[in-house]
Image 1 (cartoon, rainbow, N blue to C red):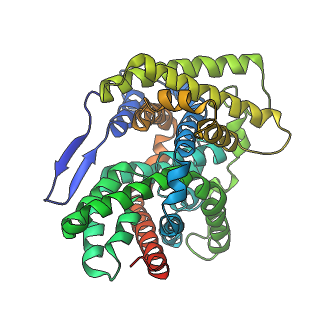
Image 2 (image 1 turned 90 degrees about the vertical axis):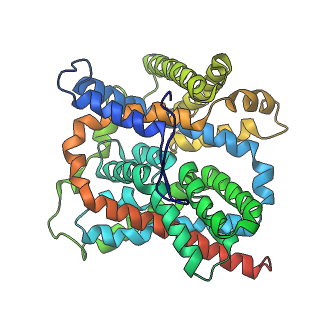
Image 3 (image 1 turned 135 degrees about the horizontal axis):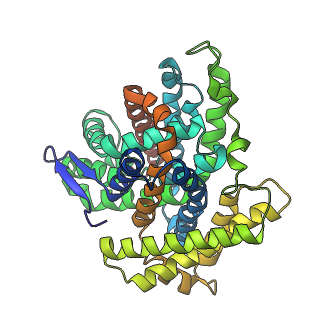
Length: 415
């Protein structure tokens, strides 16, 4: 957070942004891989894996509270902004390409979303950290963090120059759930259409808000099930004929350990969760102060509120007799308590708004970096092929959203 965002300007419209969350991931991995360092090893990597499942709930709670606060705005943005969210399914065009390049179950994590922080959390929660699906989503996440902003800036400028799609639609397509990619894409479009700059910024901002609010639900209920079905249908016909070891991956084997196990709810587990979340909350509050100059006390209170929602949601997963994931409970609780007019809304919104999502992601990605260490050998196998998949994933969601937005704008008489 002290380093901050590093901007590398390639041209007037193409820039690369290096974010603190990327530094944290790299430094966490470096601590594990550096041989002289003895205090971060396999045991710490294992603990980090379990802690991540808990911290995913923190990310989801923060997004859910933002959703509750913005219900009025979401209602008023119009059908085009809502329907273009289905363009997120454009990432699935990369699935058969990934199979052709030799990937197997990794393709579900790689191509079911744009692979940003919330999607990373969903995949880890559903499949387990050591799963091939998680290796896939982590690969695209890292690649997207490095080249995503530069690529989407180039992509949007080319598309807006050559395709018969309205600039408003491209602005909506820029809101794919990544602040840096949103800014890079919007800069290119605004440069091409300076007279529309104010309107373009408004549409892009609303679209990105919707992506943050509803992107996790699109991923959970639509894109992941579709990716699984496509994989089941295409994998026997495309790519390697050999059945990889990953096909026999035991999700329950990862979840059934003393850090992550979901079968029981004990006093010891609640104490462990509470301890980890208090430590994590303090880290985030300090990072938030360093990066955004927000008061440490306010940030810490905001994080404790988020942490309580997380613990309640994870407890309900283990108490309620139905098979409902904790992220669903966490999302519902976060939305409800933040809806304007609800007695808790003002208090929760005030303190949680002091916590920047990017700071939570930075702390979270430090744990991810340490956790990657145990599987670094497998992770490296992604290689250059992962870059190809990442480019198709970004292109698919961007063009898919732009096309849907353009059609809806035309159908509703807005253009």
